[in-house]
Length: 164
Image 1 (cartoon, rainbow, N blue to C red):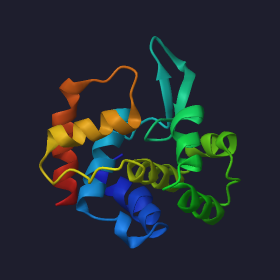
Image 2 (tube, one colour):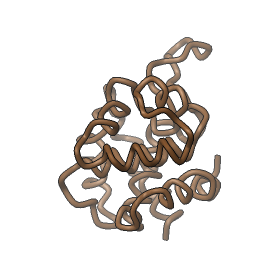
Image 3 (cartoon, one colour):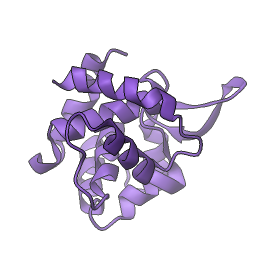
Image 4 (tube, rainbow, N blue to C red):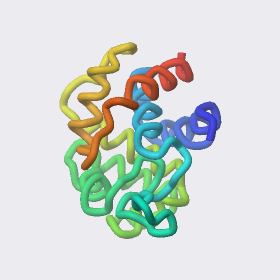
C-alpha cells in the first residue's frame, strides 16, 4: 500500500481518536517508518519464514503480539484509558485476545495502538531527520526479535518524505 493511502486510511483516522497532543509530524514519521520496517504495509500478519501460508504471532501493519504490545498498551498507565476509548470507538472488546484478532483487519485500530505504544515511552519523540534516534525508539518500544538495522534508514527517509 502507498504511504499516502496508509495515512488516509489508517493514521489520520487513528490520530483523530486520540488526544491532539499525540499527533504531529514526529509521531507520524515514526509510525510510518515502523510500519514499513515491520510489514512494509503489505502484511497484516507475521509471515513465518519459509512457510508463507502460516501465520506468526504478530498482527496488523505494526506487527503487535498479543502478550507483548497489545497487552502492554491495554495495561500501561499512560495508554490504558486511551486504549479503552479507542476500543469503544472501534467496537472492540478491550481484552488482549480480541484486540489482537482485530488488528489484522482494522488498520485504524492498529495505527492507534502503534501510537499508544509509542506514547508509553517516557522520552520525547526524535526530532525530524534523526533516523538513529527513531531507530533507538523503535528498538526500545517494539523490542523486535530480529531487528534489521540495514533497512531502517531508507524506510525512515520514505516516511519523512511522505509526512513533509
